[in-house]
Image 1 (cartoon, rainbow, N blue to C red):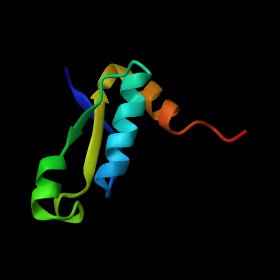
Image 2 (cartoon, rainbow, N blue to C red; image 1 turned 90 degrees about the vertical axis):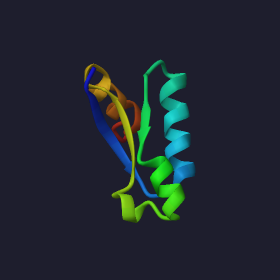
Image 3 (cartoon, one colour; image 1 turned 90 degrees about the horizontal axis):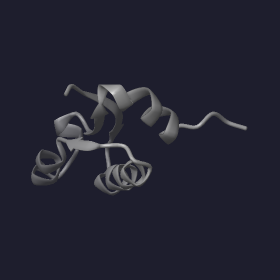
Length: 70
């Protein structure tokens, strides 16, 4: 299963909120770089905290997190 990055966050709380929203909606998110960012003390040094999902869910998960304006 290949994972695709759908969002990059600079704040752990924001990454966790997005992960929780995705899980609640039935997606299978994974957070990358979180431990490194927390250990170093900043997500900037790690390139951000990455929210990833399986490739087959990527388009739907992006649309879920970023709905079109009404």
